[in-house]
Length: 394
Image (cartoon, one colour):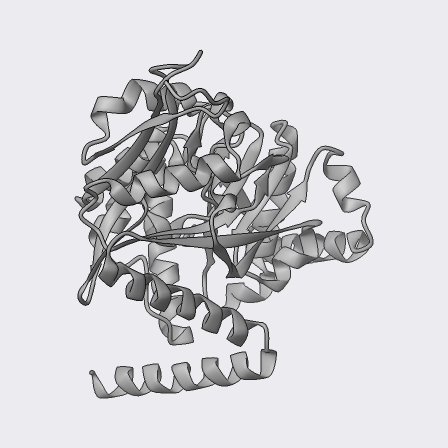
């Protein structure tokens, strides 16, 4: 055993989740762990998407924690052109990634330890050219992210949260409180004029599936209207989210909990839908949608967020997370902005070029988004070509 104070680790890579389920679940409750790296979230995604997992585990090799799990990095494999690479499981849909770490490892990690671990990862038989670890905060819940010791670039999108510790009335007591209450009353008035509404929180599998189908329908129409690709169109992606929503109904830790505004009368149509995750005292909005047409003028989406934030306060949540992506309605509520970072690790010689290309894309996206004029031009060009492809059927 080395005569140093630094811990040593034995690393392995697995292509199955089940062998480490017990150890993984024992770390699921750590407050820093994102819902996206919990066992059930990753298992649902892998099972429904039939994705190829690549799970890197680190175990203490000696010392007082010898034999215990130090960390788990849950990845899945992809192929892009000539490159094979790995990302966090369900990466495109994750709002925050923190990995799976034991409390001891969070105390032990430092620059020297993490550089040695990176070299150990590169030496593993991973079967990929590079690893992309994206949407990671430098610190989360006052804890440094161990991967922040590796070279990273700032993600082009930020995340927005509200501190709920003072309660809902304190949130409404901010500078925009008068406007927020007025918008709430206006939305209620417009919906009451056509028969009223119900605020729904799905508590059965059937209701969860019904609201998710409403979301998928609304989002498809919205993406087409904006000239954007529909990231929810894949049947396996939809199945994964349905599984997440229906398998955690009777648990405190909600993978997906569906909230909605639905008309009381007429066709009882769903005006707005949102999916929340609950882990400990952290509520995260994973995605949301609103109906198009005349009901848009009632701002059902803003009404829904008002009610969801109030409900989160009532349930004792300390943080309401709008997730990644800059929108004006998020800024109108939030008092916390979290900057995320992306880390690339080249595993093979070819992977150095692939990792460099991935970093360049991130730099370009961040540059475009940080310059409003350029960003608007890029959106106009994208919208033009997508509308052209729709009209010609290509």
